[in-house]
Amino acid sequence: MHTLYFSPASPYVRKVLVMAHLRDVADQIEIKSVDAFNPTPEFLAVNPLGRLPALVTQDGALIADSRVICQFVDTLGSAPPLILQDGPRRFPDLTRAALADGILDSAILIRQESMRPTEDARTAHMTWHWNKIERALDWFEARPDALNTLMSQGDIAIACALGYLDFRFGDRDWRATRPQLAGWYGRVCRLPAMQATAPAAPQ
Ligand SMILES: N[C@@H](CCC(=O)N[C@@H](CS)C(=O)NCC(=O)O)C(=O)O
Image (cartoon, rainbow, N blue to C red; front, top):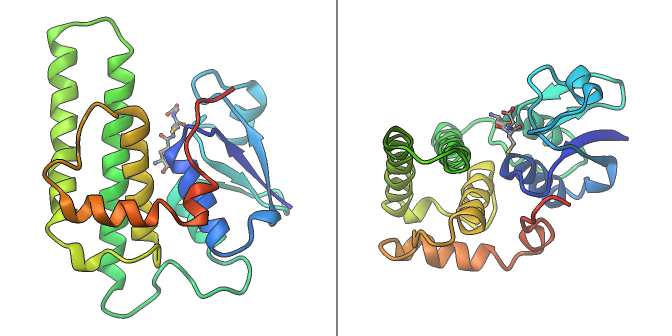
């Protein structure tokens, strides 16, 4: 059994879990809840960055960072890989996954800044990051033909990024000017892997 350090609010953790569900290997992964913003000494001993997700294999090896953990999960079981190994879609899809992770990096920074005392510099910083999200969403909106029904890592990353925007920034109407993305997300949202990993506030 492999051990995944987990928070139900983390979109990076969610990417790993969606992949595990899609590959039908979730039963090989034991979940351990961690508060990433108040990590225990035990967790810091596992992952010196104190970041979620982190995975410890059944052999005791640390695998850190959601992108690397996803690569590991992609080697479990016998389903075809979700991380494209070759062919013309490989680098476009890796780039889509990286741009979707960039949305998350900025969304989480905005969330952290919003929890600090108000000041002009803080607002400007959040706007600067929010603009990255807006531009990346527009980039996806302009390429609707690339969107499939959770057939690759890029699809999963985009879906989880949009789910996180709804979860934490529900007042920002990203759908208003992005009908392609909104329609695609409405469809993938209904898939069992997405339903089973819907974000929730940590207990
Ligand atoms: N690039 C990392 C980002 C992980 C990340 O920032 N996780 C958040 C939780 S959603 C975290 O652990 N934050 C606490 C910290 O950075 O110390 C990944 O993809 O795994």
